[in-house]
Image (tube, rainbow, N blue to C red):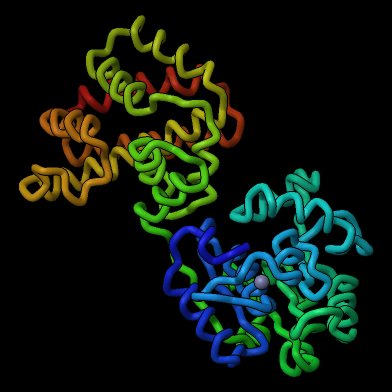
Length: 374
Ligand SMILES: [Zn+2]
């Protein structure tokens, strides 16, 4: 993986390049990222960059023997460790084939996607004792081919107290050993580990970065990429998920819903509910996500009404902005609050497998009530 295939994150990339170029790489580095920020990709790209024999202009060459192996996640000096499920003897080695496949498909994946891939269902993953002992063993071996041996550990949060076994390794790793920890929740990591690592923070992506990423990785049209970026809240993994859903006109569906609930004709509301019910749960979740996004932007529009006449700073597409501007005469601040609560509740119940038809019909009736309570 090369840096230029990773969306955004210029500051983190620059920092990592500098470390490698100046040969001053801390032996234990923790990339602390937001979900979907590309933190894992950065760690993997960094490992390749460090091992590359012929880096140029801040990029690994992509064709030396180290690069070729690193790109396929099979370099013998790059070790991976990640949460797994299935008993005390199960380690990252058990799932390394699946791991390589998962990375090739989507290096932005989250813990839940990964554990579901392993068939975890409701089981919690972990990085267990045997895994820790294996890591210590692997890193005590001689280097196979490269200048460094590197451990990329994804989500040290899953170590729990087993992390104590790695303290000595992190504090005084064997010669030419780099530990790259990729974490997302600082509070779940042992302080003793945290304090031994140099932190690199990896923030949310901007809408523009997500838009560019979708255009370059999936070849989406700019407007579609932009509307997905608006919903993804800086999380590229989320953006990829939305892009994979069958194309839905959430905006049209949503405005139609508001209109029908405003008028309050029961037959029309039921017909709309039928239309939404066939979309399936994933789409309904996205739909509600969209609805909440619309309300957020709508509130923004109401509070900065004068400055927003040209829509600057409002994350809505032109036709949505037009609809939102028309709506400002019908929906007041207290109603927005109640509507937002209603949508959040719906999302909660959809997540927990509520009957979709009943849920949305009930929501339509409540929405009508909120409009009438003005
Ligand atoms: Zn190379």
